[in-house]
Picture (spheres, rainbow, N blue to C red):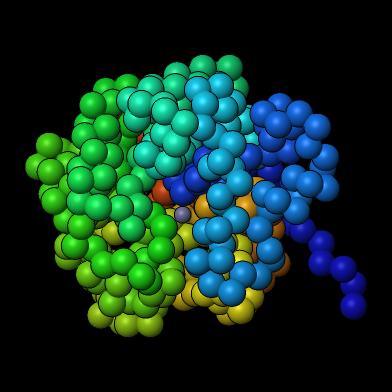
Length: 336
Ligand SMILES: [Zn+2]
């Protein structure tokens, strides 16, 4: 058998990434800066997750070492700066970075300072690297109503400084939505965008429940929606965008491999889908690598990736002028 030959070098194409966690993306360089003496092998063993975890819970444990490091102003700023550099190297032109600010207060940082530090680092790095970035603040499934309301208040407070939405992350299986409904309702009433992870560790009913109870415009993953045609219809009718992260779903044992992944069926169903990494270090991937795997598995070419990038851009919380300019850039690049 001849080796598969890629038709395109996907790194060169302009891309949009809406679903990437800062704490899942610490590069070796960043870890070595924060923790001098760390060897490459140590970083690999500690920060990159197994190719195949038992489930989402095992995957989430792999994020702990990065969280433990990111407890100072300097560390938060460096992690964000490093993330933007990695996006630029992957030719991501517009990105929404996400993290949970309350995870970074263990050593006494005030939540406001965590967000301000991340925003300042993001804006500085984005300008230096010539890309556009916005920030999403995550609340977590196991958080109390008070913690979600606090995260919602942070999102509102910094909405004019680059925060564009609140997300709900972490273990979908063990924690219901109840504690988060008030925070989401508050943000919707204030006109701030809300999104959530769903349909990853749990099935299509979880996507349905999240749409009904949280009123989100985008779902992180949502890949198990395919299990219920009624949920697929609902996503289509409401124009809900799915932030699909293929390798991450294989890593957390949602699918056996790329060929088994629902992304092709979701595209065939006409849903709005985009392609994302979820985390560049824990999942050990880039968008260019995800594109190559999709090309290899499903024969996706310029048309499919143009559609995915335009769908992500339309569902993004970018300013209108950024959307217009980048849509033109994407159309040109993928049709050339
Ligand atoms: Zn995620």
